[in-house]
Length: 117
Length: 112
Image (cartoon, rainbow over the protein chains, first blue to last red):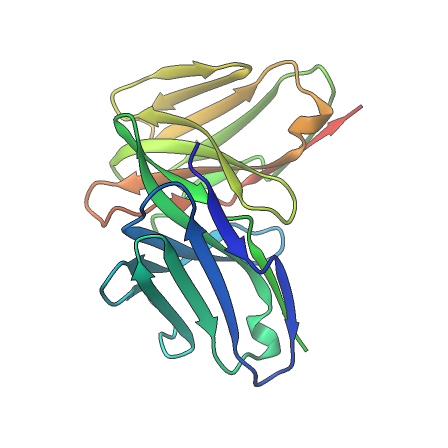
């Protein structure tokens, strides 16, 4: 199946710094990627939809100035957590939509565990 | 909220037994998908069932869909220790944008 690479796998940073997370589709072009956030033992909460060449669409309650999304190419989307605070500590997962046969499916990156000290 | 609900939230069974998880959702959908997540990892797609399908099989997995009850079930037969993971259902709904909404998930533990 399609492969989505997400880096880094984990990151520890100081409060007030910014962290960039990359999501790449390795063997297919993804015009749309999605960013999710997941707290321990909870479900995935969609943060934003990233569209290549246009502005991301953010879900209600997600600060777009805090979570900057850039989708500069058909294979790369980045999420930058700006001025990170301890409450931003979470597991962030990206996914990319790919057409497999007649169905569209989501393929997920392996996630990034962010810890803000 | 469009988010689905799954039950049970946690399930612990012995290896070799069957595991059944249920998912309910709120509005009309195009399809419903099941995913597996190992601890601290991304999600792996298991199976997709379309709204006009009632049952689908893939290896040891059997998925049913009842659109009249807005519910789905995932059955894992002859469970193995490697099946230990969290299982999520996800729906994309017709009226909204093309995006998946995930249920709360079922944490499945297979005891050897």
